[in-house]
Length: 249
Length: 347
View 1 (tube, rainbow over the protein chains, first blue to last red):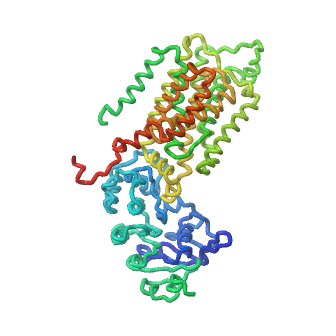
View 2 (cartoon, one colour; view 1 turned 180 degrees about the vertical axis):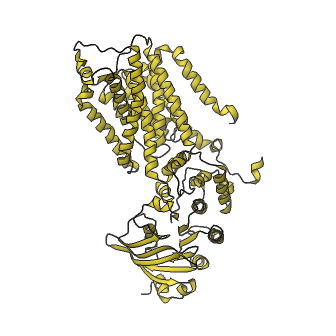
View 3 (cartoon, rainbow over the protein chains, first blue to last red; view 1 turned 90 degrees about the vertical axis):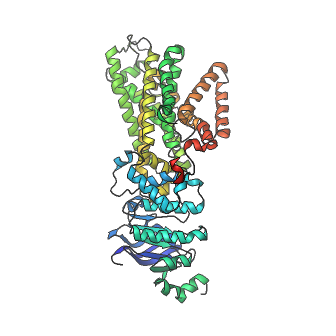
């Protein structure tokens, strides 16, 4: 672990009277896998949304690859190579899987005129099929994405994110709703994406087995504040984390 | 469908289009209108079907193009205020010789295209930030507002409307003359939309329809794509409006140019009837709709609007997916939707 890719400093965000995030600071190193845990309503998804520009933050700073991004818009941030997936899976339901992949191609340095090129060139198509194979959806590639099962849609969403070739991928509960027998496969694929493609991962996860297996470093939120940080073992044995999860106040 | 057989539809359409004015010389203006309806339905579907933005305001671009074209046709030769003031039978007769008339069209139709596209860019930047029913309602308002502005603007004839220039004697069959303008425009529009849907732009537009937030999160410049899509619609509708004004001969601001309650609704209906979000759906829908409408006008005179209204209700209630949509639901394999593993590919 070397350079810092994402640096969040003292970020706060309130919705009306609800303080969803308060003075949160964390870093994600280049090439690392970092986890974000916390009970329901602790502000994990809010933090994700703040980072990718979905809503403005009240105070603080968010730097990605050295650049301040807290004032940028969603699509601008995405084009810089910082991508998120959603807790409620989002795919293009009325397009087939291959088309879902083709439109997810990276738009970094893309000019508007590129939109008037044909839908697929051989290189893109090959890459799309490879990634569909990687997530095990090759045989379903001509089906409408909306006709896939929920778990398959999650895998498709992951493949789409990889197609984009991001520098960093923020995953909101990548294994929620996936058949337990498939979960190991998802973990392997996430690790594979990190190792083979060099994509930095920042993962929200409720499944402790998954996050302990996956992450090198874990942050724990509770009531909108940073509660604990450290390696999986440190966090697992932190009494405050146990309290937050089990409700012993 | 492989090889040339996939072009059967295209060949039939062009052949029928070329032969029709000679086979049915008495129905040329209705058929010209049909080609324009195909343009309306195709351009509406680019937003409504392919992008999921139901616009009731596309009629604005038709009206803008119609007025622009007529004003240019007149304005190149005469003073527009004199021309419109003379409408009450002031004694002055405004004539256009053959060259003047053709020049007027050669400048007027492109000018209509440009103003139609400009109107789409300007309005699009304001209203395409809205989504779903808010966008639909807002565009409905745009049509009404445009009609009211035209209705009150003395220079372009206000409520008394404006007459398209009289054709010179050299053009002996004015209906046939404009039939071919409409025919060519419909073909060009169809080819342009076919091409557009095969580009990455087509994918992006579909992505916006399916999940705009996702498209944005993946880095697509959604607002710009939406405005471009509407601008392309505005461009073709501007030309179509210019032709329609000359086919109708008389441009009434509310009943012809910005006619939200007829053309504005019909274009939506034609696309729905044929199948929203399909390439051929709007074409089929426009043909079925125009033929039915003309039959109602011929055989149910007096009740034609009731019959048309009833048909609209029946389409929306019983045929929400349209003709092609229905076929696609029943026979998804025809549209290439199937499970296919690597092993099966060789077969």
